[in-house]
Each structure stands twice: as structure tokens, then as C-alpha cells.
Length: 265
Image 1 (cartoon, rainbow, N blue to C red):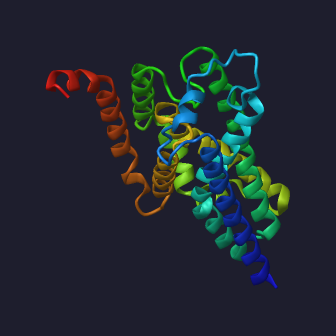
Image 2 (image 1 turned 120 degrees about the vertical axis):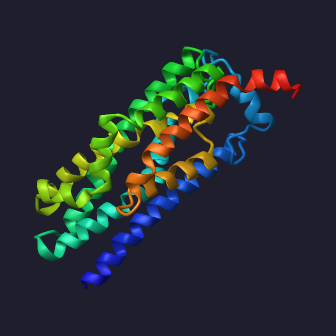
Image 3 (image 1 turned 60 degrees about the horizontal axis):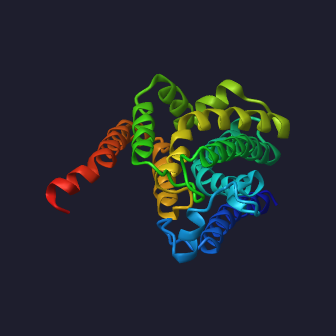
């Protein structure tokens, strides 16, 4: 019986992840975007629409943007939670953990990311109406994209990143220090873990504005990196190299047009 419940919960968890990725794919197709977030003819016309036009445009309204970002949080962040849930399962034997508590951890964690989805949807609207990004959420200026890459790259070296990553990287230590039993206890721990995870990974969400928030290839690569970053064996070894890579990316984005001009490209 316990094995059946465990299998059902894990199947539902991965089913939610797959559903979120399918939803993102369907939304990209509806907006005439390819897997790199590049628009076709219809998408290109949508990209340059004025958000103040007297017509309903989903990407200029909070509701559809929140749904999009919520699906993105599920697609990208739930896979990174697998080591955390495995750690909770290990404690179910030695402590008084329950499947209800396991579910509470998932719901608490995802609730925090949904709050972040609401925040970043509001940020996207502000950037859209401020003329900083277009209707597809892509930065209009390479200087903004470069600045975003630089900020996220530098954040990889900060004490805040180190503290938040430490919790995400070693969830067992968090559980041991904040253990609560039952569904309510799991929910409380999930909220705490979700807060640390947002503190650790917010930058990779914000980077969507550099290359397009509907760029599925970027989403996949970012998800893979965040999963690797949380693996106990190697997570600590990839954080700072990624910081250097992002800073280099900022430099390339800033000077690329000049380099092309000098080389006659």
C-alpha cells in the first residue's frame, strides 16, 4: 500500500512537470515561435505591437502573463526539487515524516515560486509599457541584455548566493534544523526551502528577458544547470564557473556589433 502511494505521488509529480513543459510548448506554437524563441511572420508582427493599442493582447495583461510564468516555474523548478524530496523520503524512516508531509513540502515550495511568478509577471508588464522589452518579453536594447547578464553573473559570487545555494545543495541539513511533522509541517518547510531556492535561482528566471521568455532551448539549458547545481556531489563546483560564463556573455553581447563592424561581418 505504501509503495503504491509513493509511486502515485511521484507519477503525479513528474506528470505535472511534463504538463508544464507541454503547456509552454503549446503557448510558443500559438505565438508562432520556434524552440529558440524566434518569431515567425505572425510572431514578428506580435512582437512589435504597441501594448497601449485599444485591443486585447494577452501578453500585455497580467492574467495570461502570470499563467505563462506559473507554467514556466513548474517546468523549470520542480525538476530541481527531486534531491530535496529524496532527502525527505530518507528521513521518513528515521523521523516521523509522512506522505502528507512530502506533499506539503511540494506545495509549499511551489507556492513560493508562484508568488515569484506573480512578481516577475508584474515586472514584465512594467518593462513592456516602459519600452524596455517587446511583446514577447525580449529586450529591445543589447545594453539591457548585457547588463542583465552581468548582474546575474556577479550574483553568482555573492554571499547571498552562497547561503541560498548551501540550503538548496544540502536540503537534508535544512530538514534536520527545521523539522516539522505532518502536512502542516511539510508545508512550512516547503515554504522555507522555496524562499531559499528563489534567492538562489531568481537570476536564471530574469535572464529570460535577455533572450526571450518563451525560448524553450534556454529554459531547458537553465533547468539542466539548476539541477546540476543542486546535486550534492558536484553542485558547489559549477556555481562560480557559470558566473564567469555569464560575465563573458555580457561582454560579448555588448561588443558583438562593433566586432562585426571591424571584421566586416
